Image (tube, rainbow over all chains, first blue to last red; front, side, top):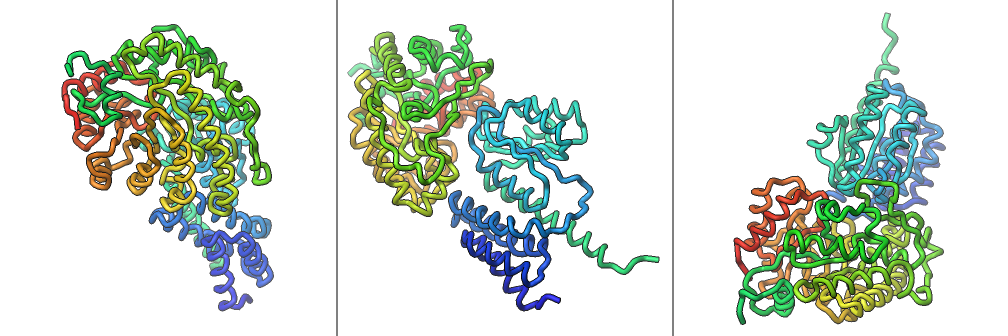
Length: 234
Length: 346
C-alpha cells in the first residue's frame, strides 16, 4: 500500500519538475514514484500531465513562450521515458497507432512535436515521419501500419494545400482512419471542407487540443479503472 | 513639386524621407510575385530561384501587370544559409508552389555553434545571382520603380542554419552562446546587404520573423535579439524596413529602437494601438492579411481591408508577409485601385 502522503508529494514533484523544466528533477521523481510503488499511469497523468496542463495555462497567459514550452516538454519526456515501460496498456477501444508528420515544403515541426507528445503520453504507438514529408509517404505509412489516426501539420498556406490530397487518398483506401490537421493556416472550415476529423490551429492550440484529448483519455482511464475495480457482477 | 509626375520611386523615396507625398504607396519589401504573372511568362515556380534573368523577369511582372510600386528579389529565405554551406531544396519536381527550404542544416547541436564565415562569402551560393537580378531590374524598370531586396535578421538566419528547437531552447538556457552565433550571423547579414546595395537596391527589408512574440518573450527580444538587429541596421546605407510578424504590439517600441527607417507588421498587430504607442512620426508599414484577405477574399473585402489599414494608421499599404502567388488578379487590382482611389497620406 502506497503511503498517501508520500504519493502526493511525489506527484507534486513530478508536476513541479515539468513546470520548472527540470529534466533531472523529473527523472528523479519518476524513479521515486516507481520505488514507492505508485502506478506508472497515475504518475504520468496526475504528475507529468498535470504539470503540462499548468504549462499550457502559463503559455496562454504569455508568461511562458515557445522556448519554455520546449524545455517543459523535455522534462516531461525525461520522466515519461522512465515511467512508460511500467505503464499498463489500457483498452481505449482503439489500437492506438498514429502516423504524424509535417507536409512537404514545410520544415516547421514545433506544433507537430507537441501533438506527438500528447500521443506518447497517452501510450499510443507513434510513427513520426518528421518534417518535409512527401505526401505519398503519409498514405503509404498509414497502410503499412494500419494506423487509427494520421496527423498532418503545415505552417504555411502553400504547403497546407497538399493536405487535401492526402486526406482524399487515405479516406479512399481506409475510410476508418481518422485524420487530424494542424498548423497556422488551417481552419475549422478547411478541416470540414477537406474531410478531416479534427484540427489544431497553432502550437498553443495544439497544446490545448492535446490537453483536451488527454483529459478525455484521463476520464476514459478512470472509467476503465472504475470498471476493473468494481465487484464482479453476477 | 507636381504630384502628377510622381513615380512610385519618387513617392517611396519621399516617404522614407518623411517628405510630403500625394498618397500612400502600395508596395512591399518581401516576395510579391503572382502565379498570374508567372503564367504570362511561362515560368515554373521551382525554376525562378536559380536563374537571374528568370528571377528579374518574374519580379518585374507585379509592377508591369498591376502597377505594384516595387520589384523585389529573391523569393525564398535560403540565400544566406545556402552561402554559409547549407544544402537547399527547391522542389524541382513539383509543379505547384513550394518555397525552397533548407535540406541540410549547418549546425545540429550545441557543440557545432562556433562557426566562422566562409572565405569569399559574397561569391557563394546565389548571392551573385540575386545581385545580378537586382542589376537587371534596375536597368529595366529602376528609373520609375524602387527595387528592393531583403536579408534575414540574425535570429531568423540562425533558425535556418541550425535546428530551430535547439536554438529556441538555447536562447533561454545559454543566451551567451546564442548571442555569439547571432553576432557572427549579423556580420553575414551586413555583408550580404552590402552586395545588394552595390547592385543597386533602393531599400532593404530585414526579416526577423523568427523572433516574433508568438515565439519569444518581449524580454528575450530586448536582451538577445535587438542588439544584433541594431548592429545590422547601423551598417545598411539605404532605407531599411524591419519586418516582424505575429503579435508585435509589445515590441513595436523595441523595433523602432533598432534604428530602422520603417517598421513592418502583419495583421496580428493592432495598428491603432501601435500608433498610440509610437505616435504619428514613425513609419509603420502594414498590415494587409496576404492570405485571408488577398487570396481568400472578394475584391470588395480587399477594398475594405485596404481602407481599414490606411485609417488605422499605416504609412504604406504593405502586406503582412510575402504575397501568396495564388492571389486572384482581380483582388490584386482591387488593392491597387483602392489605394489610389482612397488617396490619403499621413
